[in-house]
Image (cartoon, rainbow, N blue to C red; front, side, top):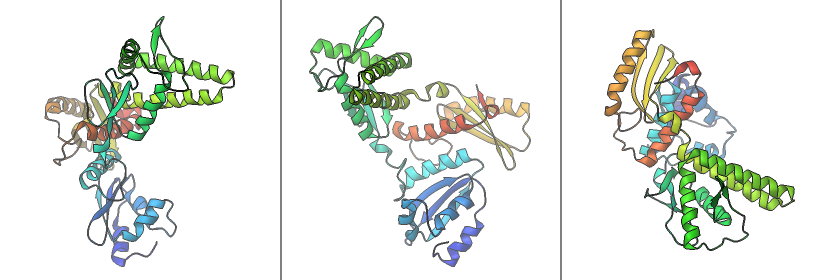
Length: 328
């Protein structure tokens, strides 16, 4: 281990090999970093090696004077608690999930002849999101300017790449606007548009127009970022979900609705009748959902904050074996 106090070294040896979160403190008692792990002991000790792998750790390690940890029954709960603490405490060395007030929306704009899409700070009519990266969204918006106007013909979308954006007439703008709203609201129409972009990309490549082909490729990647932000977990979150996750003392059940944990309960031995009772209780609790997903704090969950909790829940659900997930 790197140079640390004997007191801290002794505390590191008490950390269990269980899931949970850890908090690093500086000399002033300030929490400077919050993390989570499936195995707290291995994770926390990895920071105190002679040659840390990550640049952030190298910068942070000299400030760490103390550590505290909270054991959770499951990795899911560790991830949700980490997210909550980062949003509440805003530790200096945490980057992700901390600044959700900076998340933005994509808006299909009213007529202005040159900019059919804009990036805005708060939700308005005809807006989509929120999205975490303002700069990523601005890059996508700027690249799409080169293929306007987008029109429809024979149940498909037609457009051409322009070296410089063209000025749209009011009629062209309105048709383009209707098509954009349709694309961002209908996943099937969006897939059709992506297919047209791919055809254009392959066509440009076949004529050795590799720069144009790469621009189409970048547009496709950018649009996939947009559709992921709009509807990535739509089908999953439209259903209530029961999770059966093992923990050292048995099985823990989670009832999830609208991207939130509305009920959880432990069972040393899980039987069919227990599941039925739990589902019934979960349904009755749906109207009494906590302010924070899986938390007892008073952190107010805005739409922007919620997407981080939502993404954690959905990624954990999708990683679980099928026999641990029941769609209700």
